[in-house]
Image (cartoon, rainbow, N blue to C red; front, side, top):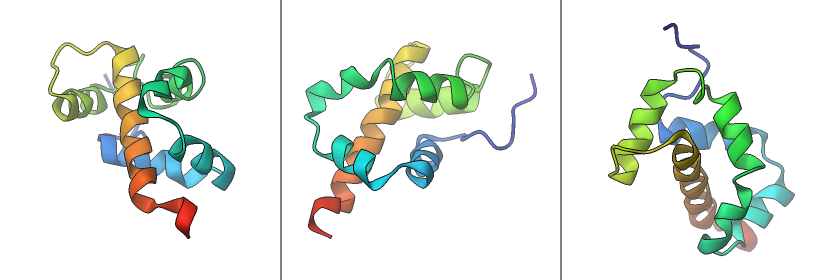
Length: 100
């Protein structure tokens, strides 16, 4: 299967791609969420990730990157999107956007 070269191939690339288009308000909202509440993004941000990053259509490179990051080789596409959401959340926490 041909993979679109514009699709992120790693968790880090996926996070970078999301950050490029994310508004400051959305960054703040996500950064202030409790880790346990990230599951609430499953049907919004998670759906965007699954559809836009080719997870339903064979972006196996990104799927494998998420499996490596999570340490779980049996991740479902839904779980893969949560790996990316958690990585995005962690990146926003490191950026410390609330103190800029």
